[in-house]
Length: 385
Ligand SMILES: [Zn+2]
Image (cartoon, rainbow, N blue to C red; front, side, top):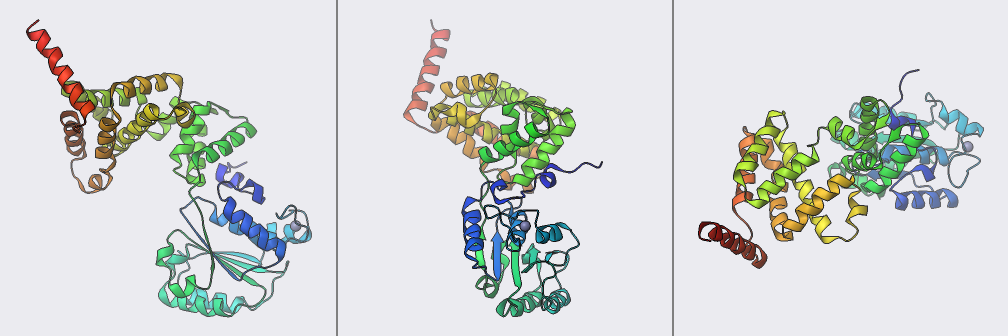
């Protein structure tokens, strides 16, 4: 049997399977219950947040003759008919490869024919912003006077590229980035279900790496399962995704904040030798400083960070040593580098300049000044006991 990607295998079959988009699910279920189905919907949001999954579910739900808590039953004749991917009632069109006016004209011809299996014929047009101007005009004509049996669901990641005339014809739903705790719960469920061993910290890390996209997180989960032979540990995940070892990161950040240039440059040298991408490293440093600030300022930091104990120890030590201002200053310096890395020919130099300027300059807070005076006094004592 060929391997089925987790994202496909666990595509939601009912509305309660959908995570992170409650506001949309509730609104759609209400419409299904009251029978007030609109003729055109616009689903917009980042990739991997569930636009196509919900569009497919909705398309089946408005046709199902035996709804179960607002979701398609999967058992009635209509559901069975629509489950066949060659059915003529739910049509998925990828606008990226079918963006010409001829294709939309053909669509306009076809909408006239009534559905074969159920009550509605549903057109899901993915990446709709890719349509050409003339294709948009052709689509607009259909949206203005759609046949009663037709529902359009337009999905896009770039809503700003759609003409106002199209926007004004659609009922719009904005998909949110999915919170990583929700994604972590889903991955935990999937791993448990599939008999995959895992460390909870590893799951949290995978969920975070998805950056709000369920699909991206599940792709990373797929990779980790394959790489670790079904035993997903925190270290293995770090290895798979190429994120910097957090012990190494801790030493680097500590040397930098301490003002220890020799140790800082040594760390950069050894990380660089390991083939690390400097842009990714800058991102990791900013992320690590964020975790340190959370450790210092939030009493429930353990719940927020969900890291293995030894790494939490590192963060506790680090954050007790430095002020929030110092760490924030450093974090800001690295977080603002992303653009610069795109245009530089020498990423290592860029990284070093940033690290060295953090290492040698500090925000002039009273706390920081006090620390410097104390350090000077200590040095004086050594010279002149
Ligand atoms: Zn059904």
